[in-house]
Amino acid sequence: MNSSKFLFFSGKGGVGKTSMAASTAVQEAGRGRKTLIVTTDPASNLADIFETEIGHHLVPIPGVPNLWAMEIEPDQATAEYKERILGPMRGVFPAEVIAVVEEQFNSPCTTEIAAFDRFVKFMDDPEYDLVIFDTAPTGHTIRLLELPVNWSEFIDLSAKGSGQTCLGPVQAIQDSKAIYDKAIAELRDPQSTTFVFVVQPEAVAIAETERSVAEIAQLGVKSIELIINGILPEEVCQDSFFRTRYEMQQRHLPEIETRLALPTRRMLLQDDEIKGVERLRQTGQTLFGQQIRVPRGMHERVSA
Amino acid sequence: MSEFLPESVLLPSNGYSRALFFTGKGGVGKTTVSCATAIRLADCGYRTLLVTTDPAAHIGDVFEQPVGPDIQPVTGVPKLFAVRIDSKAATEEYKKSILEDARSRYSPDMLAALAEELESPCTEEMAAFDKFTQFLTDESYQVTVFDTAPTGHTLRLLQLPFDYSQQVGLMVATVQESVGLKDKTKARFEAIIAKLRDPLRTTFAFVVLLEYTPIVEAHRAKLDLEKAGIPTQLVIANRVLPAERCSHPFFKKRSAMQKRYLAQLSQKFGTPVLEMPLFDHEILGLPKIRQAAEVLLRDLPCQITK
Image 1 (cartoon, rainbow over the protein chains, first blue to last red):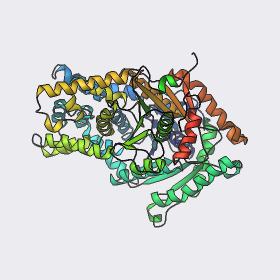
Image 2 (spheres, chains in turn yellow, orange):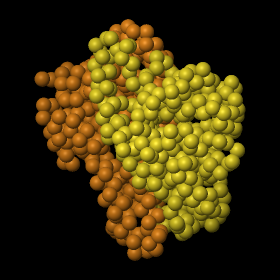
Image 3 (cartoon, chains in turn purple, blue):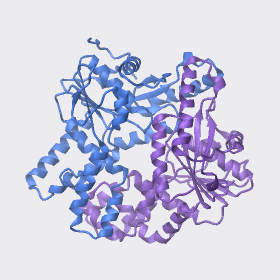
Image 4 (tube, chains in turn brown, orange):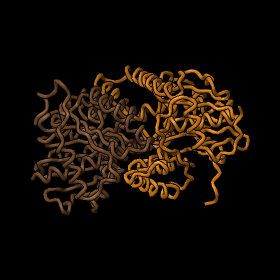
């Protein structure tokens, strides 16, 4: 991941995605790379983690030279997006069609596409050496964006009642097609992009991550790495209650590495939430100071 | 807030049956909470149906017996019945019906785009909701427990002016049906929405972990449900660290952090909060689920009937 220009962090809410992304950002900025960390997560705690106001615009992070951050406000991004499409539609389509398209904008996948629309702009920006996204697009979004389709015809189909999809906003994709195509090519280029999946050592989480990794790999993303987060430190598990949980996790660790077969870093559970530049710096050092575990047969695919 | 009586949101009242929806992001423990609640209510003598959308393997592991697509009694819990909605199969069926309808009218690349559109997560939810409605209107159970719930977005879509049959794909293959049948479908759907909005007949409960992101996510989903006219009546904090085991400073600190989040929950959601502790084992098999249920629902006043 060290040489990639774009890093996408992926994983369920609550696995520590943002902490890992922010620690990576601090680490890389410390190495002298001009770094931007962007979140599109409506539940993001990026500002909380950096202990500074961020918001829907670029701000330098105090105490970390070379680091900038931005919180893409999903509602605002979606509203901007919405007007781009609804504006021209008003007065052309009947009110009930407009009502359906408007509700479609509230779909989670629409919000994601609006966010993607915002962050491809950063992917096109030569200003930064490294751009870190703390929320990766899903496979569905990527596939949708690469479809060669006449989207205006599509609105019409949508209006006829297939209803629940995010058809509305994709019409705007037509206008941005060339930019999206370039962004997707970058996502697939292992020199440009690395996807980092964050997972906790639990059975259900492992199965889910396995599915997401397979989907992203199938889309042609070649550089994928893993961080196993939330590992109980052995020395704090003297009580039998935690000892039992510790042993459960230890059984899952080799299983994750066998089943997912990705270059893997490990992170121990901390006694509190990771907050503040100092903690992030330490966490970054722990994360990158360790020998990355590379599954057998994969060495040639991982750059040092 | 006056003292919370769990029976006011969990038990059937006024002669109505009650639907209980447990909602929340993947991994927060919806299955465990749903199974525990269903078993407890059945043990208390209520004829209970558990409707699960979990993968067969997972729910099978939890109950240590298979749960299939037809309603079946759960061995070892006399008044409990269970059924599994195969959301993958339901989604496939739904997609197929829409695509078949579109095939005659659109070009191949339009169909490809439509097929991709139908890969949206919303499709699976729509398809599952369609199946839910059958169980939601079945009055032969006193309590029906669902281990997942429709989102506000889905519920609002279903209320839009397009006709229900086309929205949900229920009758996509038969869209040329008579006007009378469409009216009937619409009336049925309106009855379902009315039931979902009635706090005496339906309870929406969020399951959360005591951490920043899961709480913020659940709160957003709660506001989204409100926009569809659905109130949230209960929050369950799952995996609460047992204070008596947290003697090491490491866990003492984590436990204190959880307590801070726990203290905000009731006010943030405007509902009572029930706590489910973290256990040292995975909750698999009836004895373990019963044990978890006893802790979660210790204040529920009902006589366990042996």
